[in-house]
Amino acid sequence: MSKILLAIEGFEPLSWLERFRALSGAKHEVKLWPDIDGASDFDYACVWRPWHGLLKDFPKLKAIFNLGAGVDHLLQDEKLPSAPVVRIVDPDLTIRMVGYVVMHAHLHHRQMKLYGEQSEERIWKDHNEPPPGTVNVGLMGMGVMGQASAKGLIASGFPVLGWSRAKKDVPGVEMFSGEEGLKAFLARTNILVCLLPLTPETKGILDYNLFKQLAREPILPAVINAGRGGEQVEDDIVRALEDGTLAGASLDVFEKEPLPAASRLWGHPKVYITPHNAASSDPRALVANILSQIENFENGRPLENVVDRKLGY
Ligand code: NDP
Ligand code: OXD
Image (cartoon, rainbow, N blue to C red):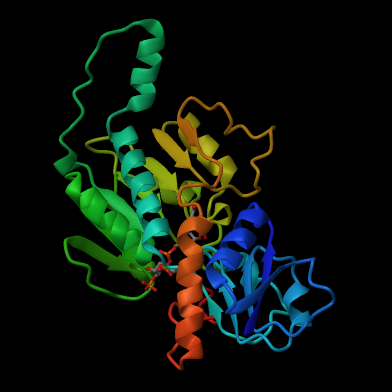
């Protein structure tokens, strides 16, 4: 029998505990921090935003499972044990993100804020949006989320551009990479979608200077960020919306979460705000995924989706 530690901040922890216990049966003993009776001999930790320093007290960990895709918070723990860190890759998480990205691309292309205002005023007026085939959607981050979103956008008729760190080919997507490819990627992008992990290289990347480089035909540019709030400069987003550099924004993540009540983004007529739930981790879908990884690992097979600590994702 192996021992699994759950340490969860920011998600409701009891539903994870119940699900882990229900699916583990007698195979694993599952405990939820801090209710661990002083034990330190856990084999696996399954965590979301655990407070920094917590995991160093569990020297026998064979693997650390992050209950979401992004590992920025975990990797900022200077005392993180050296056990492999595994991030979630799961069809449930991915399809939620695809839904968010495709929906928000449509909201901006189809000017839904404008029709919302017209509805308030009882105005019946069609603004003849350009064909989707002429509106380029540019995805920053072409990993699991970016590539799946590309397929959804292509199915909606949008030409898709992608930007990644390393050079790669993705069917149906015009790819750009690295610093040297960013300018050309932005110059062709109308609707910019950020699905980047937060690393020292991507911190603050969504700033005024970047928004200025986006294409302004056939529609004015919009930005969608479902990566991490640390990638955006919120004062620059407000400035760009107010001087017309950006026509709209969809923000699921924020520099500080929950978004402070004083933020000028709240209630902004050109902004869609969601509470970091573009792709929520759901124990009903994800626990089985983690337990099957543990079973494979115990049977001598390698862990999948292990994070590269040097790259930070
Ligand atoms: P992946 O690791 O699969 O993909 C990351 C992509 O970002 C890769 O294409 C990578 O390039 C690219 N990238 C990383 N650094 C750079 C850089 N400096 N310049 C250019 N490209 C870069 O991650 P996922 O697709 O699974 O998830 C992406 C992020 O989405 C997560 O890290 C998380 O922050 C966020 N997320 C948010 C959720 C939400 O609800 N809002 C839910 C789930 C995820 P390369 O291909 O060359 O390695
Ligand atoms: C994730 C998230 O990284 O929900 O999975 O933000």
